[in-house]
Amino acid sequence: MANENLHKANKAKNDEFYTQLSDIEKELRHYKQQFKGKTVLCNCDDPRVSNFFHYFSYNFDVLGLKKLIATCYKNQDADLFSENKSEQAIYLEYYGDKNGNNVPNPEEIGIKPLKGDGDFRSKECIELLEQADIVVTNPPFSLFREYVAQLVEYDKKFLIIGSKNSITYKEIFKLIKENKIWLGNGFDNGNAYFRTPYANNYAEGVYNAETGLVKFRNVGWFTNMDFSKRHEDLILYKTYNSEEYPKYDNYDAINIDKTADIPMNYDGYMGVPITFLDKFNPEQFEIKGIDRYVEDNPTFGHRFTINGKEIYARILIKNKRIREE
Ligand SMILES: C[S@@+](CC[C@H](N)C(=O)[O-])C[C@H]1O[C@@H](n2cnc3c(N)ncnc32)[C@H](O)[C@@H]1O
Image (cartoon, rainbow, N blue to C red; front, side, top):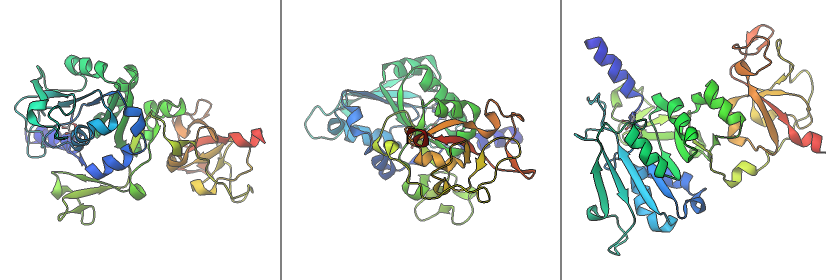
């Protein structure tokens, strides 16, 4: 039993991280015009603690929204770690300010009970998803693959937070390669801070007791909504030479350790770190795949090596502009 509880707690631990309003404001700035006349769904959001609900309800008129829906998950593993302490899973619908005070009042927010626990995969939550044009939230990190698969299946626009580790998942990378999902603008200097109830789980410097915030280096925004930075060329200044850019033992591509070092004149495949995706402009580069799962990788399922040494996660890209010139 103790083990089972620990397991449940460990699982829940990955999921309770609350997004700051300032981070939502900074990211949303890049997509504002795309929200006009749209129904927005926040489907992992207890309105009492979610800044996503706060952002969209307070900016309802500025964005010109049609409707805002939020669903609140009743965590079945309700324990010390969870702030989702609702007795009942609920959803709410907001159609904007009615009494002219520009603030969402309780009587303007229609709160209704859900039959189940508010799991985003449940039938009733999928019915709400079907009404939505755009889904915006920070979903549970532990269910990211399933969460994204559902958004793609229902053909929704989305702007969500996730761990950048998920880029290397086969299913997620396939979507990146097909230009069905990409990284958003991102957190300031790549540092994301979340409020969390798990203060004791972190080393000094990671959790700040004064602010109550935990810092993650490897978290980003994932989206299928366009924004201008995505169409800016990465400025390249280096030229290719075989010493600085060795080829892999097991694939015909050169290795690059830093995105900024991509040579401007190499006309073959290049292996770049996943941080490249922060700078990826699909008009400038083609993505062939990610090392382990590149279709013609002779050692499929394994990473590339140089002199027998494995090189960590590399995305294979090709410069499209060289051909154009
Ligand atoms: C990373 S937290 C983010 C919470 C909120 N969206 C925010 O950004 O502040 C993810 C939330 O999803 C909830 N959750 C976990 N499993 C869920 C599920 N199957 N369906 C819906 N929500 C779930 C968790 O309890 C947690 O509160």
